[in-house]
Length: 172
Image 1 (cartoon, one colour):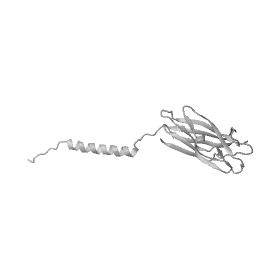
Image 2: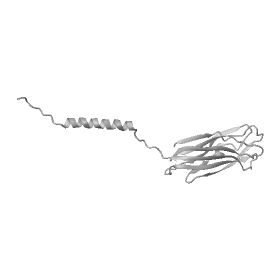
Image 3: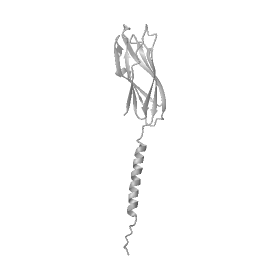
Image 4: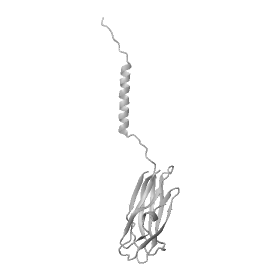
């Protein structure tokens, strides 16, 4: 299974005075091969300016059909991050099923939480797109074709030369 990862280090929490300002990362566009899985890794930080522990209480996402997203926030990240600390891991994975039509598929992922275990404020929002590409098949390069045809031509010339009858005559 081919895996591509992207580090979303830009996913730094800009949590200011009561979570009035969620962090927005630039849209992430990745190439993915149909029949593989694309992984999104993230570095989630609670800036030292925050004196409170930041709770990661859940997530919400949308993604174009027929793609499926495997949400790993709860599995790969702690439920809370102390001020000045950070956590790194795979945030989610997107499966590109066999038979998928090549093209651009988009999605949005939100991390929910706040300064209490019950807060559901948007802490970060990630817009992403996956450029699904077909698996490449091995195609000979032009140089390979030239070499192959030259060899076949030489072999054919040798075979043709051996078939010609040789006339042996005697001098009279």
